[in-house]
Image (tube, rainbow over all chains, first blue to last red; front, side):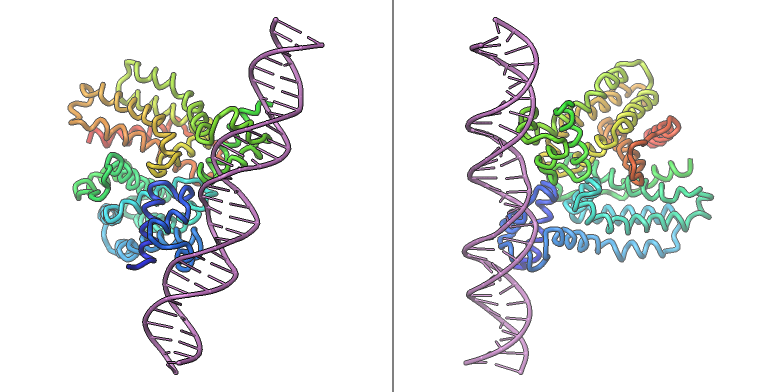
Amino acid sequence: MDNRQAILDSALTLFYEKGYDAVGVQQIVEMAGVTKPTLYYYFGSKQGLLSCLLTEHFARLEAEMEQIKEAPDRIPDKLYRSARTFFNLASADPRFYLLMLALFYSGRKSEGFQTVYPLIEKYYLLFVDIFDNASQELGNMHGRQKQFAVGFSGTLNHYLMMAAKDMDDLSNLTITDQEVYAVVHQFMYGIYS
Amino acid sequence: MDNRQAILDSALTLFYEKGYDAVGVQQIVEMAGVTKPTLYYYFGSKQGLLSCLLTEHFARLEAEMEQIKEAPDRIPDKLYRSARTFFNLASADPRFYLLMLALFYSGRKSEGFQTVYPLIEKYYLLFVDIFDNASQELGNMHGRQKQFAVGFSGTLNHYLMMAAKDMDDLSNLTITDQEVYAVVHQFMYGIYS
DNA sequence: CTTCTTATATACCGATTGGTATAATGGATA
DNA sequence: TATCCATTATACCAATCGGTATATAAGAAG
């Protein structure tokens, strides 16, 4: 048994279910079957645990997103591949994705928001970059790149929120390629019009 | 001085800034310039305070949304008026709207979510109703009314999140009629296509 | 066998948590 | 004046909060 991993998994479940602030470290270690010093040995603090949890999950996006950014694809394809990547991440562990959303929507001065924001900003800036490099393809964007970046990621998040909403068993959250296409298609509609 | 109102206002600010779970009742009463028994006299519990806070703000929507539902307008007009109403609510007090969003995105088993959900569901069902009564106008919706309802309210929330994102002073959060039109227009695009 | 390092548990810390028992205000009513 | 009711403060509660000092167990290295 890997205690470190057990702690991470228990924390993810509890943070997702009840929220970061509402969960005590005591509850986490009990669920993981360890004691508090073990948690503090690996993660240093409650916030360190959250930070580590988020960073390790976000790492899965890293390579793939970098690839998409550098590829010579046209905008619709880049957006399609990005959406597919995000949806795959959400399917792989809905708990993580929904926790991320909850933290992102929480108060700016909260520990949770401040922990997740740097990670989210990274991928947000990557989207800005994609739209920046596409001025020639989409014509003059009049500085609306940021708006599109926020809009696109917001659209993806909203779609996943919708998909997860009515499920009580999140273990088989899947988004088909047709759905991905439809989401990106509808978003592009808004850009071209 | 109205102590009850002072408590509600302090709670709204703190809940919005740091999150419901991260704020203690002690902090609330200190900011309001009262003591704990005063808070418990008026609201009974911390959750009672939140519930009261949300209910009183939601009440502003009540009449207007009921009017929109009963009106003989066509779908685009109903959606436009609904959007305008929601945006006005957000403008009137961005703290409340963003708190509501944070609670809605928080874990299903959290006190905050369970408190806000019945209130949100009410207006969600109202949207479902609007789309239900519009089958003849929009053609066979193949049971996608709920999807549209979630999608529409999600679009509004997402737009307000966007608008509030980069503002450090939320006191003048305004959404113009042109913007409202654009948002609804883009959403309708997705429906007809 | 000894020493060093990694990993874990017992038992504790002061501070804060949501909540309350009790009493004292102060204005209206009788 | 006496009574009553709404409102507020002092002082307290057990429980939990995030975090730690100390000791110990186990395996690797010398």
